[in-house]
Image 1 (tube, rainbow, N blue to C red):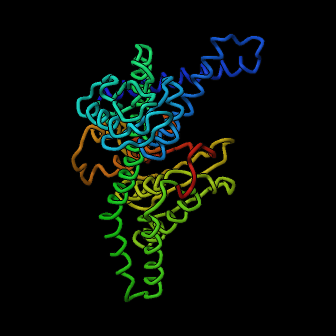
Image 2: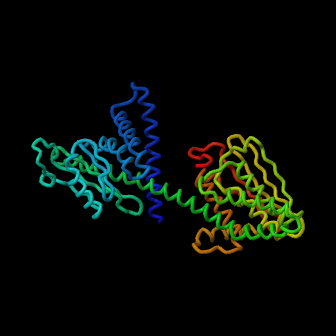
Image 3: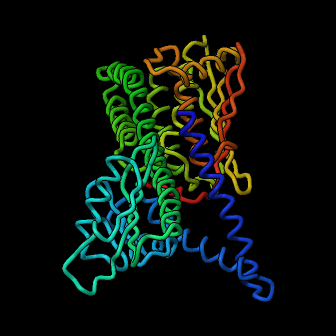
Length: 408
């Protein structure tokens, strides 16, 4: 796993360096009196690679291959170029279309062996007297974990020269890296969905039982209140278990939290006090779904439920320029910071059931990881706590972030 991560970081570093070089060359290109022929050639290569990278980053598909293959042929400098997956010829640009079955057969062999090969004229014979195809270079495309996912086939109008062979191999290696990044993006999305499901599972056994018990206690003594609580509970579960969207707005999250607290106040009575300070201008801010709610649940469940007497939960969201700053604070029992740190570290290593006492660690760790994966490492949770001193959890959320939209 470490090797794979190192390889990915290496690819990301290379892409960053190429982007910086492209920016520099673009500036030079704008000032044609300064840009040299070498710099203009560098720009053309980087620009073409960028055009090919975008569809490849969506994964190896017929639509993506059709968009990328023309630009890949330009990079290789071949008279024709084909892209295949493990079984199909996805797209072909330029010459060689009538050799499709032969090229696909060679690609399948390259996929099976993981080795590149050079085809001669005898291996690409046909009945056409005017056929320009005289050879081909077949290079496997390697995705994550060294798994071969397809092949790049460059068609030649003569015996494949060493330059064409090298260009094909290097382009196939670069294209494989783009496909590996596409797989990582897909894995990240699947992980985010799995983490949301984990949070929903965490809500189910603890809160639902207590909520139904509290509602049941009012069925005979106060039927109208029981009815209202059932409606609040229904709306809360509808939101928590909704089937679409990784992101929501702060306003929607706060509405769900209000329903949760309404039910908990029915359970705790006057023991649970709530204070809200929400700046109206930050209500439309987009944040990961079920990002704030688990922090409020932790404050009630682990902070106040174990505290004798009255407890206060404070939720604050304020405008901070380009960011929204949110805090959830309780004056409950708190905990030893070293125990909290050790518990989160243990959860990161564990693959088993964390158990009841680790519920707080699960919620904090899950939210922290999701914030960092979406917004960057500078946007994780900040936790302040101490035995008998309550707990304060703070987060920063950018008001605008590329690719982050409520309901997406």
